[in-house]
Image 1 (cartoon, one colour):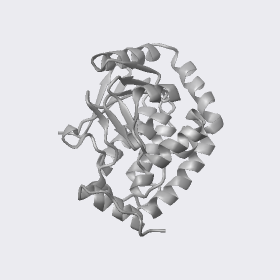
Image 2: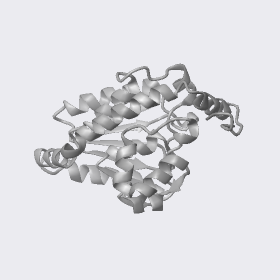
Image 3: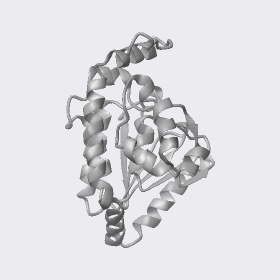
Image 4: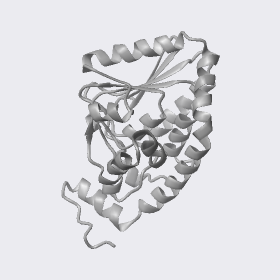
Length: 255
């Protein structure tokens, strides 16, 4: 079974997380598959819209921590950073349909999508600090800009889950609906967007994203430098060990 499924229907390219037994937790191989698919889609004139999907009960639990520890991102060309670069630089519109939990990068990747539709069972979390890490995907720039500094700081520092209604209030989600309606609605929106003049849609996106793209690149690079260093920190090692051992971490002995 492929952990990432891709399906082309007309001018809509769907990228779907397909690892339900592990809550769609993302491995390095999955990041590479998505990075390669996004790059190919950008150069394919037949693709007009990219649509991300998960399962009806889970979008993604974020990084697969075991795989992450065994295959830590060693540089800017690591699969996870290739994926984030290709997503943030996608010229064509990207839509996400989110049901269930979207954890870590499952939430931060949405900041780079052009429209996000969510089921009423969707919930979100940014547990980087609680894992001894810092934010990624330029979320330390984009989330405060979207939701305001205090709310962005609360989400990124405390790492507490928040529900779909708060996500919509923050501007992270465009529309909320029953889970049974999500897939069809998101596909309908993708079809409507694909039917519009492609150059006009791409130019509109470029104009909106262009003014901030350099800042996003810089922030993502800075985050990546800190993130890679913090992966080997005592705090991160304690957080990962506690997670795998199903216990509460103890950070009291660290400065």
